[in-house]
Image 1 (cartoon, helix red, strand yellow):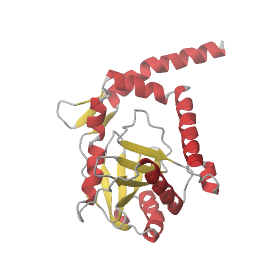
Image 2 (cartoon, one colour):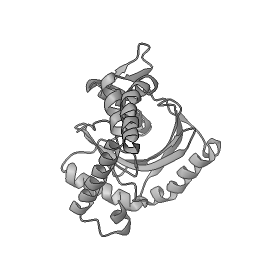
Image 3 (cartoon, one colour):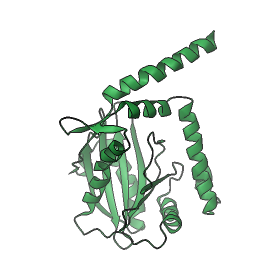
Length: 253
């Protein structure tokens, strides 16, 4: 009887969940970062930024500014510390998401190319609930906490997946526009694959029934567990292929 009750409850979640998500989850159509001083940020956000600044400086990155990106999804607040390595045309960001229940952060390195291809390497542990774009490859290694090690891995991935491509140069003072374009492309890209649609007022991208169902089901057990295991296996296989699994941090990834 316990197993039957559990199965019934799980089945109900798979039916009710998409309805709830369909009418509550939405994504901002615009991103308007406003620069803030570290001392004006919430303590946990400021601590996350300060923790990474010396590491990134030692890797040749210049701090471009710290920003409040507002609410990109309901009941969240997004913060960004943005950095540029002008010599290598690479960017780094410390992203912090604040919700009523928790504050989470991750480090990311990213490189864009003249043909439109983008490659990102980060420590984000979140498993994506939607298909990723072939033109925007994202590699997640949540157990690699050292910035230098993650940056070296980022460049090995560039050598493997972007050989011969020309990095896109960004003019001084225009660096933040690059980040905004990535964020604001999220909704239109998912509208193209049928997961979202622009709201009547043009302020938000709302989920379609297709998007609500598929995202909810991927986020529920047992699919969520399978997706997490597959992602972890893919990252481990990538590390093995790049011959970097010998380091302690990489072994944990």
